[in-house]
Length: 608
Ligand code: PEP
Ligand code: MG
Image 1 (cartoon, rainbow, N blue to C red):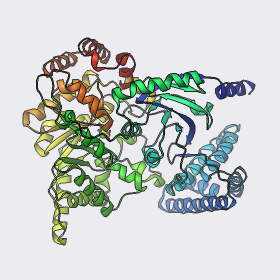
Image 2 (spheres, helix red, strand yellow; image 1 turned 45 degrees about the vertical axis):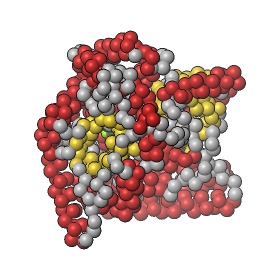
Image 3 (tube, helix red, strand yellow; image 1 turned 180 degrees about the vertical axis):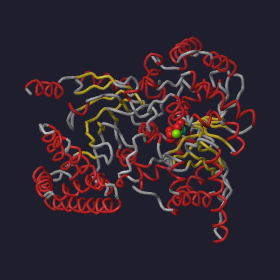
Image 4 (tube, helix red, strand yellow; image 1 turned 180 degrees about the horizontal axis):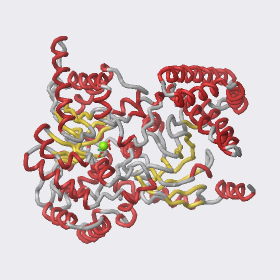
């Protein structure tokens, strides 16, 4: 114990340098706010007014009542005896007076939000149970954990972010949920430090879109830091510095200024469209590459347009789900899709249907999937819960009267799913016609991101108007490495020969048939990989808004012929290591001026 407290003191006062993996560029300096829980994420909120405290207690009691109702429903539905027994145990915990009173006491006496109090009390119970000798009783800590999560997930629906977090906040979190970032988007976060999550995790994709620096992979970080500690987050190198001295702060402020303009234009800058950005970039030998943007927030399109984006290559519609904490209604969807249609004007926007997993949608039903990424995700979920899918299809049809919206289906594994969706689209068109509602004729495309789709690409190309190549999931599934798992990040090898050969096959088949192929995975946003994609035959790249200027710059400084020659050599490499080494040699020899100093040592390894 003495040892632990000495360590805590050390973390509280000395300047400490830690090293993680940089996943969103920029330098952020601010004060730590710890986020709790992996699901309905929250932080400790201090409540001082008596009236507010009483309100918080009422909020907690209402959440317990609702959690109980959910449980009762589940108990009635569960015929399996063991399952019902477990749920009965949970219901008893939810009625346990001492458990509930303790939570209320923490809210009242510590003056904190309900989430924090639930977490504290549940933690103390779990510690006691874990220490028991009797094995059966010891295992009961899991029941406490389940019940606490159930209450927390109900509390999360009544959004907790009523309290603005400070302008100089650096979030410290075990694993960041995209919905948390969406909820905090306008509060001016300085940076994110996460214990888990990889380069292609959705939360970090959003962080990059918002220009919020982020570092991941700092295991155990939350255990040692407290709210309010000053920290520097270097989203270029992955360095995190706790309790920096005045001198260190000065040094990093200078570094921030000098690097800012290289890779990322200043956050929220709305420079007018300059001449150099008005046309698509061309390689040195004249090959035109179409630049599109991946959109999570419609408002980002203003910036994308100023950087010369020619439409939206991927709109991740599931972020509507996060915003509204539930499925958005048909009319809510129509209005967002119409807004996008207006925004892109003469260009097109590809609306991807919800790419959600069962757990994120039906959390309270305890629909636990052991491997959600391999479960009822994306098109599988849509085809299993058809009424919600039909609603989304109708919304897109209705919003596309201007003719500039397309439909993209996520996680398609073969032609049968496309045929099923075509039938649904026709039925919904008929329904709208019968009702006299106006609609458009969107083109239909699919994400190619499941390995099976690569092997049946010829058949798929016969059924679609275009394809979107999703390299994030393609790498995850081809290499069997969880894209969100930082521990396995060293196995997420973008230049693995299997990945390059799959991309090459898909692009060359699409090019042969004249079907547009848009690369929209994070590879297209990276100055290391975009030239390789061009060399492999990509002519349309859809990327994060903040990557557009640097990708344009790289493309216009490279000859297609040379990119193609390098891609060819990479395709014949035997391992990812060989390919990475070769790429480093070739690029740093030919185009060193295009990459920031140290890029191949630091920046590139962050991308893997
Ligand atoms: C992909 O998988 O590459 C992709 C673009 O989609 P997402 O990142 O949303 O899974
Ligand atoms: Mg994907």
